[in-house]
Length: 114
Image (cartoon, rainbow, N blue to C red; front, side):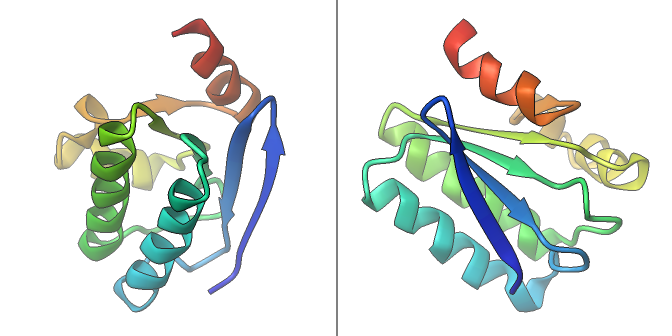
């Protein structure tokens, strides 16, 4: 799975590679994000701008990470959703669960505005 990350103002920004938001990568994605949580990172912003399709397994991994990090007084934000991906978040009503932003700076800033 092609996953890169960097930190911005104490927020881990995770970029999901093109075509990687599918069930074959869901468990690896979840494990990698949970590593950040286990290492004390409580603020994660997930960049989905390279994603044109997202499946239910991958969404489930996102929800699982959100639950785990919320239990640790942290948060997960998502940003850069293509129209089709945003439609999936709306269809599944996950737009009510996740804080969705247009870009990285907005997602990162939202952690300090909270």
